[in-house]
Length: 384
Image (cartoon, rainbow, N blue to C red; front, side, top):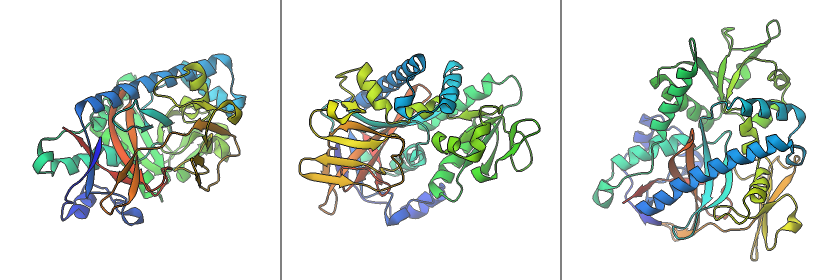
């Protein structure tokens, strides 16, 4: 695994906008095209097998929590627990998720966390970096990319349609004012259409509740039977309409058990179930149970919010609105450091995608600190 300098396409901004990647320059320089991360085939095989191993471990961990009913210490209330148990018992289909991994190409990848409910950077990983690769010349002209995300999504949406006994209409929703969330959701909608599904998109604020027959409805007063939502489960359940979810007939994607998977407190459960596993870092709800320095993370947070990290003489804190539900403590394990084209030190985290039950590809994000935040940059990858 190494970071190499490459020549940006002279018109890359126009090319990215042409494929619908309208937020390529959010914060000025989100998409990076003057470098890429280069892997060999063995490293890709390692990331693929690690991703599928971790996914299986998470499924076992959810089963363990459901069996034990040990929700309280994980910040899960009775309402959420009921939805989790119902969706897990039905084995409702999961579409996708993203594992954030620390990997230097030499040692086993280590799990930082699982973005199981509302993972973003999907369009970048699935589409944008593939178009970038197709335009490469020289050494990279014959390179490949660990990227079957689009194809696997097609299979998953096709399976959803095949499970339906009648017409399958899938609504998609997100917070439309967020370009990243809207484009990610509408990309998934486009894949669903390619898979033969009938679909519609609406802003999450436009979803209605019809008390007469206990159904969520869209702006045309159609019943929402199946809903993909790029909106966190914990937010849904905290809002006024959240009280109606249990009595509705709506099938949610991602399913409610992903609320438990996306809860960082499950890192402690994983360590209890699989102590000293080579792909896990020690984690506990009690900081006194860990030796050495640890990272303090809220059970639920996005984009690196409310993180406290101590590493050597370095202390890093991020702000945010999370943490009321509790914190989990995870052993500090620094990201690999690289030097960017400007001579600055950057740290790279692997976002490894799971679609259904199979590893589907990776994306690489980098930051100038050991905490990957909402200002992280996306750098494409290839392997030889």
